[in-house]
View 1 (cartoon, rainbow, N blue to C red):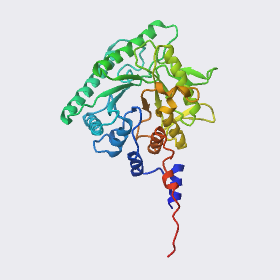
View 2 (cartoon, rainbow, N blue to C red):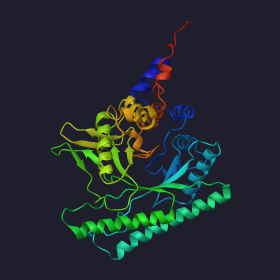
View 3 (cartoon, one colour):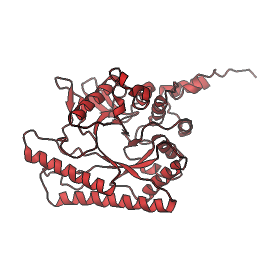
View 4 (cartoon, helix red, strand yellow):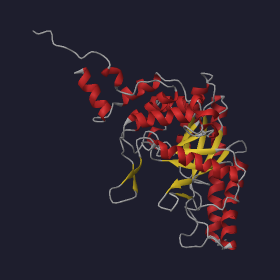
Length: 364
């Protein structure tokens, strides 16, 4: 039965229990880079949630929902990070905050050039939420005698597209993005500001097979470029996506690219053409393992291996999408595989039991 059970885990049905995942996580060393994420689910943000503790210990970050996080959720994130930091990790646990600016208050039918009431309301909401989160973190730090900080503001703004030849429109985009950037920096001076898809190159049906994200002019303020690694089983395409985005970044004087990574989810190819994002994609665990290895282990980041793999050392941090412990049923085992890959542990989740001899009957 032991062998049969382990084989079912590897195959993906049923999924391992939360207890199994927690034990796997406890046995692992932290990742070599900070990993932020789409906001952690509200129901997991509790100071006594052991899986959340292990996740933050391994990734060095807890990411909150900028527009929606309430006091209890902020308190839990600070408490967990403080608890992790008492173990004196090499990389201190910190907080990321994700916002979706220009999707909340700005009129849905308005052009990018509009500077009316909803424009002001959007910026007011962003400023207000930044200040609320900043103040509450400071309050909890005083209570806990800790020093947990916001080290990243993640900005997912996909409302507008650049218009070739339309100088007024494109200048309005820059102004809107810069206004948000400045407010984020004012609230969290030491944080990195990460725009999703800024300068990102992705595989497409274009004649070259590749296209560039059109959400940004690349004249706006930003700390890095980013790309989407949302098809882990297609590792060669993931490498080329990162490589081409880094080339684009360098052409604009930027030296870092932040990959947004999907585990147990992503864009699956369709027989009818194209790809569709699937939140329940339990692909072979080896691909999560391989991506974890390449993005994190210094052997893969060596300059001598750039052509064979990708120039991964220019990825200073990583962002997970979708959220951990959320919509993707197989997330837990894929996350464990990813972290094991980062440390070149050559055993996939579920293979531990499979490597043991099968139970035999001794009779009555």
